[in-house]
Amino acid sequence: MSSDEFGFFDLSEMSEDDLIIARAFDSLMKKVIKGAARDGYRKDKKRIERVSLFTEVQDCEISKLSLYDKYFIDDSLFQVQGYSFSVDVPELASALRRVDIESMEIVLMYYFLKKKDREIAEILNIPKTTLSYRKLRALKMLRAILSRESVQ
Image 1 (cartoon, rainbow, N blue to C red):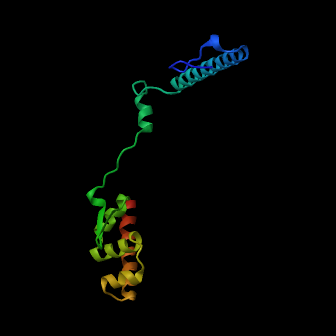
Image 2: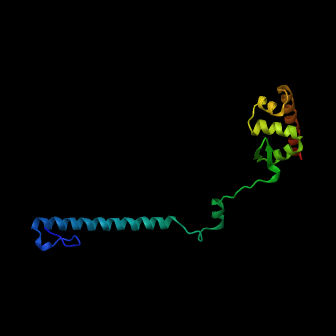
Image 3: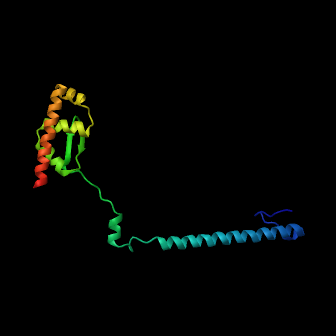
C-alpha cells in the first residue's frame, strides 16, 4: 500500500479489511476530536461564569482584595550599632524617644537585636551588673511613660 506526497493512502488500492480498519479509526478520531472540543467549550463556559471583569466588580469588593504598602514614619525608625529598624507600635516608639539615649540603646539592643546582657555590656564598655541596673531602670522609665500615655 503506497501513499502520496502528503501521506494519504489511495482507498482504491486498499483491501477490504484495511478499509474497514481505516474507517473505524477515522470514526474513532472524529469522536475524540468532537469530545475534546465539547470539553473545551464546557470548561470555557464554567470559567466565564466564575470570572468577572474588574470593570464589573464593585469598589467595596476591590477594597477587600487590595493591599496597601506600609511606609516607615521617621518617628518609628531607630538606629543602633549600625542596624536600622522600625518600631511598629507608635506608643512604644514615642516612649523610646523620651528616655535618654543610653537607656533607649540598651532596650533596643536587648529586645530588638536580641543581644545578651554580656554582649551589650561589652559594646557599651560597662560591667554586666551596671548594665542590669541600667536596663531595669530603663524598663521602669518606659513603663511609667507608657502608663501615663494610656491614662491620657
